[in-house]
Amino acid sequence: MTEATGGIEMEENTSGKVKKFLYVNRKAPYGTIYALESLEVVLISAAFDQDVSLAFLDDGVYQIMKGQHTKGIDVKNFSPTYRALEGYDIEKLYVEKESMEARGLKVEDLVVPVKVVSTAEMADIMQSQDVVVSF
Amino acid sequence: MLHTVNKSPTERNALESCLKHLKKGSAVLLIEDGVYGAINGTVSTKLVEQALKNYPIYALYPDVEARGMQDRVINGIKLVDYSGFVDLVVEYPNVQAWL
Amino acid sequence: MKLGILVNEGPYTHQASDTAYLFTKAAIEKGHKIQRVFFYHDGVYNSSRLTEPPQDDRHIVNRWAKLAKEHHIDLVVCVAAALRRGIKDENLNEGFRISGLGQLVESGIQADRLVVFGD
Image (cartoon, rainbow over all chains, first blue to last red):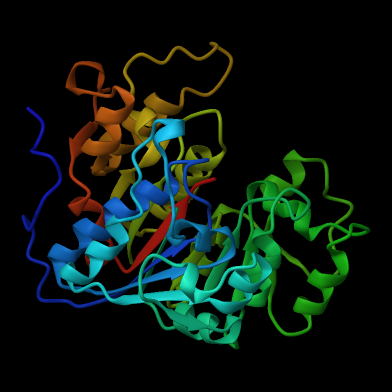
């Protein structure tokens, strides 16, 4: 039998280790599944009390755009889920300024409060992580 | 940090974006189609040569050779095998894949 | 060192699974321990019992299963991604197990390094 759908799994003793996890999003939503499935990882990781951050750069900034109406393409609109992250104590959402500007986006266009950082600041954030998960 | 890039710079912006995010103590490893970023005479060569001045850049030799690019590698790029890939992952405190 | 591996793509279509395998093999040869190989997104297809590649080509699924058996490696397929793509116990190759995304996070915590192979 398989185990139950991935929920809280603490079979092994994680020894109270707290690591800095960065989930990197660089791809647009809907054209591929990476945006949706990366969010699923982020939600699961909330149960592990780690130091979680999300990075949105390059086309990843499109994932958190407001006004996504997906009925026409008949897929689930998962952008509201980004607003739920706060309830899971996942609040460090970093969006790269240069990526937004290159795409004509402003903070007001985004569906969730974020911290806008420069490329140099994003590089610092990346460098300081223990675990970086790319999708 | 070790940065891996697995796509060609003429296909995707992964290499370009990666190079913009390097900090002192970083290294780049080009793998799979990313090894096309290690090649002379392309539109990306200058960008890579510039990065080479400040950061070590490696290319996975089996991928270079598979693609017939072995005589075109930019001077200064170090070639490694899978064993060398492992060593790089161990050497650097963290690793990020630019997909 | 303890290494965690994440494979985001399926066999043959992308090189990710090949590179991950060759990396994993090299790591073992150097004496490192593989904490887990986690298959996500289309990576779950690496666990299909039903693949029949041409005889003169590498058998990616079997190769992973053989390496896992020889070196006691935990090959984990994400249940949510698997269900989406029709990978279930009944078509799961020997050597793989289906489990939750928590196993990936745990890998990040337990391993010294988590290396990602994708598109």
